[in-house]
Amino acid sequence: MGHSIQHYIFDKTESKETIKNTCDYYAINESDNKSSLPHKIRFIETLVYEDKDKAYEAIENFDKGHYDQLAVLFYHYEKRKETKEITSLRERIKKAHEALENFQKTHAIKNRKSEFASCPNCKSKINKNYVSDSSHSWNMCPLCKTDMSSKSTKENLDRKREKLYLMEKTLEEAIKGNNAKGKSSVKWLVKTEFHI
Image 1: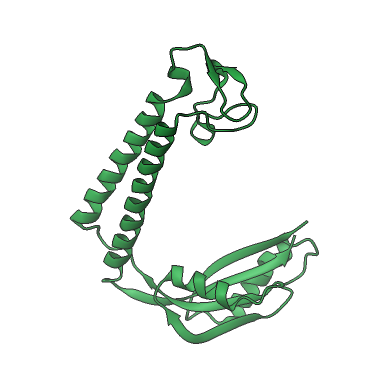
Image 2 (image 1 turned 30 degrees about the vertical axis):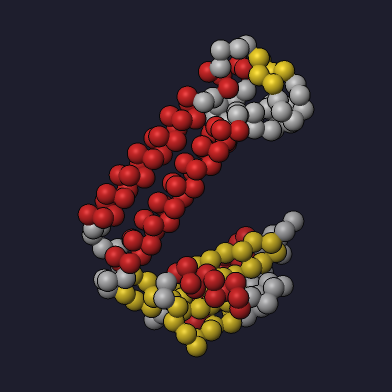
């Protein structure tokens, strides 16, 4: 039991009746009571938001809670050919990902010379072969889930991840900026919510 939040995109030229019927169709098929949306969709037409991200933010701000159904307008930009700057940034991000993976492989607990590793939290002595080197549980104690890496390894890893995050945000903004120079159309971003 819970609730499901869905987001749909429709052309502005689509009739509100068609949008309502489409959203009701999904609610009827997926909700626990097999009925249409619990409330009418509020179509907010006062502003056309600069992109889909801003439309998502607007919906969050307008949302009154309790299964509020909302629709806002936003500019959708057709994808343009990537610039040299974007291609270069993609390549740098790829290399940064590879460097991060190599760093993790090199600094994995399994690569230590000693047979056992000590957990700084639960103080257990763990056979290094039982410490996972998969990315989601890298160097974690299998008992208490504490990262058993050294302080310098953690700091180095944090710096590399932060650098990668910033590069990915820069890429995202560069792509948005490039696409914004091209053709645009206005679309609806519709948020629905129903009980499941």
